Image 1 (cartoon, one colour):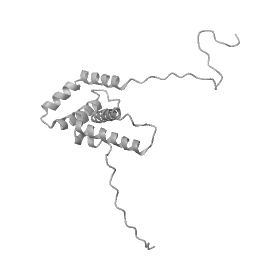
Image 2: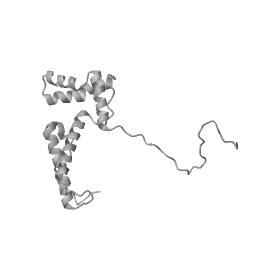
Image 3: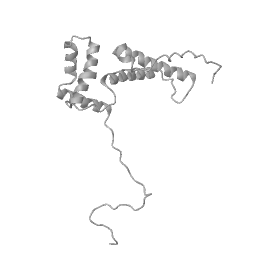
Length: 172
């Protein structure tokens, strides 16, 4: 009647300003993504057991062999289509570095409940710097200085460049 559809289809609202309900797709938690990735790697022969075996049998320095596995072997398998590409933005070494750093920073914050996230006081700024330095230091201890160094924030500000002398006279 009056041009309405009665066959079960929803009618489109003609009001462009009518409220719209949008349902968001909930992202999969990171730990579930990592577990699914590990299952894929294991099924393809690139899992944690194979990685450990490669590191032990390579005859190379274990840190170096781990980097070769993570940065070359797994990357080559992804490029060849043997295993699906990682959906994460970080390599395994980067994820391990960030995880170690984040765990250490969380540990620091539980030991310092006096930190006020809403304050920009000098005391809070000092605590924040201490937390970042603590996280960097622990990540270096866990992963080795060479592996973690290029991924971490610098605990000391970069040295200022010497001032360049400027000629006062300009000949045109």
